[in-house]
Length: 145
Image (tube, rainbow, N blue to C red; front, side, top):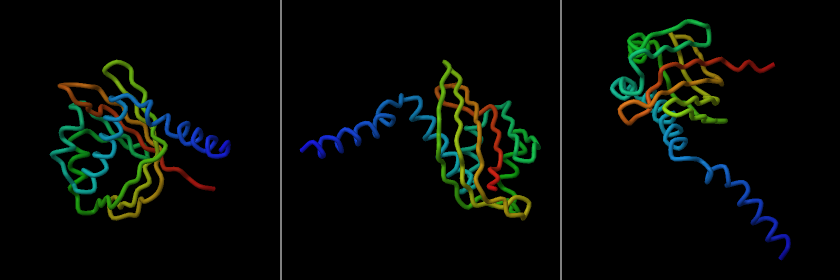
């Protein structure tokens, strides 16, 4: 009986972080997953709503892109985003601003070259017109030794 009670307590403790998430944190995790889906589907209409007017993306090489450039890259046939799996997500909310960090494991090509791998990212969001919009994103490729 004690063993069963111990297992039950461990399960509850393991689930606590999920229960403790606020509605805004859950919403931002959904936004991150929807962003991956929009990229895979080349859904520029969804991305247009997600990216703020002043959006800036910094890629793993240090190159920056505006909203218009990133949307154009999404449609370029040499750029293919096949899959993305988000892990290690952490959401920090500061009023109408939020920072989301995590790892995105992707299968992709950019400019015809394989860019698949793990990318640690930081996304900055601002809540406007009742929805979260990304104002800045930066991704760094995780190099395994």
